[in-house]
Image 1 (spheres, rainbow, N blue to C red):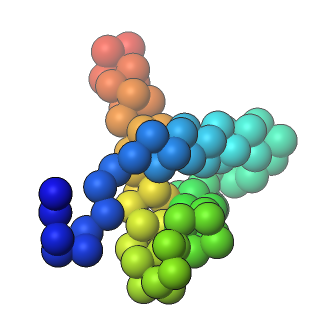
Image 2 (tube, rainbow, N blue to C red; image 1 turned 180 degrees about the horizontal axis):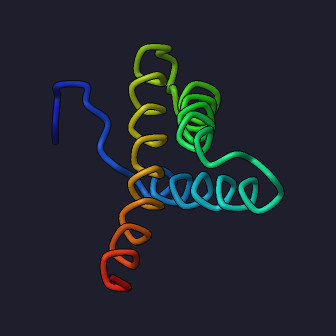
Length: 88
């Protein structure tokens, strides 16, 4: 349908965002400092993007990985910030 070469969001991408969010939460529970959580999420996103979702193009894998990592950061911090605002 789209001939521009832009990859559409697929189910595996959404599942990986949840997986990265879970990994970050788990590592924070076992001692990962909170300030390093976004960097770890970006690293995981890049890893999955390049190794698993690159589809033969390193640049596309990097773009996809950045989207996955940034998406997982937002998925974690969005609800957390909302809960903090409600508590105040």
